[in-house]
Length: 351
Image (cartoon, rainbow, N blue to C red; front, top):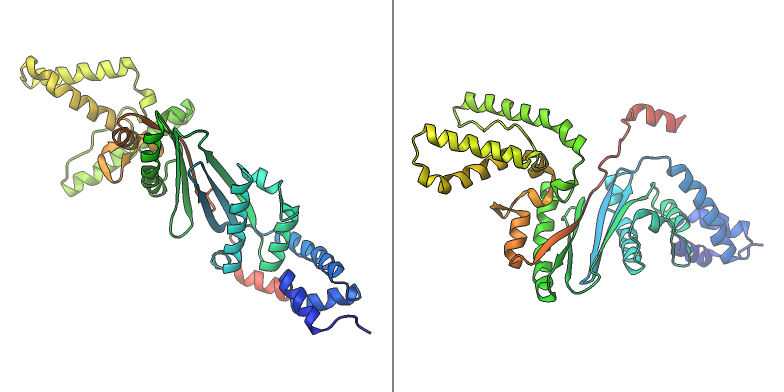
């Protein structure tokens, strides 16, 4: 005679989110022992999760949690966008993000190695995989911390939860930090839209810059071919693509060329000092295309393209703040998803 009834099955299902028949079988196998039934389902769930774990999880969301003294960002992947929009999945994302925030877990390895709700995180996640029915992966995470009141932190997650950004800035005093903190959200929105991969051109590897130079110069030449066809003004073809290449010698040579051009145009030498700085600034802009594309501080600020992001923060803070950390995550970037033959997949499932 069974030592359980429909109410026990219902309670077990509500507790574990497992299927009705799985709950019935669990209670049957454990002679109605509720805790043993949970353990039985956990074992079954782990098996199901292991099978699902072979599936590539390239969809999902990026989540952030921000306070005055710290902020965390977490990318959690699922297999399909459909599940990523599911309320159960969203609840899991919220729980994991809060867990990372409360326990100062600064990266995905720390999260995956942690304990949550009294159990190993891997076990927790496996149960969620079994419940949701898709592989889930905590792929990346990061944290920015204000170690004192002169550090400003903030973040932004785009409305579709596919892109999020965290920033921190070192400031000269607490009042400046408070002011800059609010502005960092706007800069984070800029970073979400403009996709910088690093903070400054100083972060670029010399070989990376060298490898990027020829192709980017060639792109300007190609653009000019189209501008000629359209009868529009041409772009200046650069010789370089990053400020890291513009040595003092290079800039001195550029200045001399500008002065020679002014002399050839018959411009009086006494007014050169009013013309040369602007032309030299244009030369630098033309020859730092890589920085403007990939380095946050060197990008033109989208809300005021007359200044770079670095110049904007300097203006807002009166020269008393500098952005020192950028973390930008976009769901699935860098993941290779194998294209599947849908008909073959269906046939395989029916075999």
